[in-house]
Amino acid sequence: MMTSLIAEVGHGSKKPTVMEIDGFRGRLIGAGDADYDIARAVWNGAIDRRPRLIAQCIGTADVVAAVRFARDHDLEIAIRGGGHNVAGTAVCDDGIVIDLSAMRGVRVDPAARKAWVQGGALWGDVDRETQAHGLATTGGIVSHTGVAGLTLGGGIGWLMRKHGLTVDNLLAADVVTAEGELMRASEEEHPDLFWALRGGGGNFGVVTAFEFRLHPVGPTILAGPVLWDAAEAGEVLRFYRDFIRDAPDELGTIVKFTTAPPLPVIPENLHWRPVVMVGACYAGPVEDGEQALRPLRACGTPLHDLVGPKPYLELQSALDSTVLHGWNYYWKASHLPELSDDIIDVIAARAFSFSSPRSYTAMFHLKGAVGRIAAGRTAFANRHASHAIIHHAAWRPGEDFGDQETAWARKFFAALGSFREGVYVNFLGGDEDPGRVREAYGDTVYDRLVDVKTTYDPNNVFHHNQNIHPS
Image 1 (tube, rainbow, N blue to C red):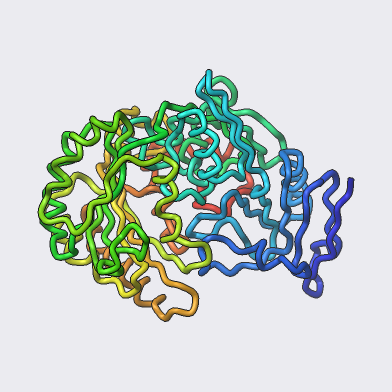
Image 2 (cartoon, one colour; image 1 turned 30 degrees about the vertical axis):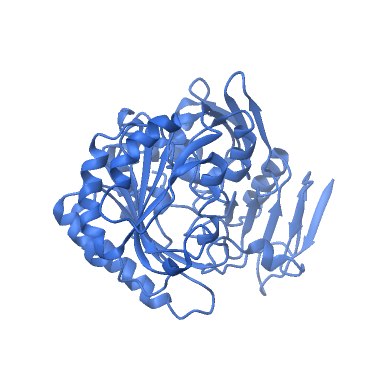
């Protein structure tokens, strides 16, 4: 079958005026189509790029055809899975977007505790299917996050301290290479590529399917946030530092410095009030979680306590409405060591200096199973760090917060500069210094990633990402 599209081109362009992708069974969308603006939109509303062609794939063969077509016509390539990346790398100007968002199938083998997941799936898709069997693997903390992007960058989430990062649970991947060849990567097949995929991002090919290891989780777990007034930030953080030092692996926590969102579960008198919020998830028996969290819940004078038994699926979607598609986002991030008094003082002094009530800072506790994987075992590096912190500037379209929020995030990031211990590559934005990609991996891992990149993509076909240049 032949699909074609009349595409607009500038005078004198060598690119084809009629684009035809032989064997492509999905849908091609161009600027002349009514849903072009919808198809090119990504999660971050601050991204406004106009691709020449959007190739909505319905299977792996479509991906192969689209990659080969792009190579034949010297087109810039962007790969879209969930489109949730803050840097907007899922869409490009004047090139082709290879869009996997229609490929969202999930198949679970409960006996083997494995899941097969297509490259366009969202974490909500995975959680729904795996929780039907009382199983899960480490995923994101927002259900509309894409599986592909989160996995390829490493994958931090509520379960990581107990079950490792998402990449620590990746068993195999189907990959379309820069030459348009389909191969399977695992510990036994193309192990160098498999190593690089576990943290190296989308630099090495288009992953059309993932195979994950699953673990018994839920369906009911103990989870929820405890809220304190912003004025108690320093006191809460000092207690939190000591509390998590000997925390069991089952306990995952995320600290947010934010305003209390206007959700039904939060009293109206707290809506938009600046608060310190410690979210918790206990990946074990509820009664054990009650005992483990008792000291935290008794710290200071909480404004509100939402910790309780709840479905794991409810936890995984609880934050969805606070980071909606189409809002404007800007991020700065880094890894931090164990919280010293100096770090706590910087955070307490700067965390609430934002102007938009939708901005926040989030700090993820790492360690546990994350830190026990040997350095270099996967391409995810900096496993020695204690925390990943992200300054998340957010404002709605039409709101005049952009310059203020961007400046707040940058200044906060700079104030923590002397404490930095690397960065999570999925938290890097679109305006980062190129050296920050190396910072995400460290020299040893980065140089090894360059070798793999040179083997599988020597011409840097896949460069619309946090790029690793071939040698």
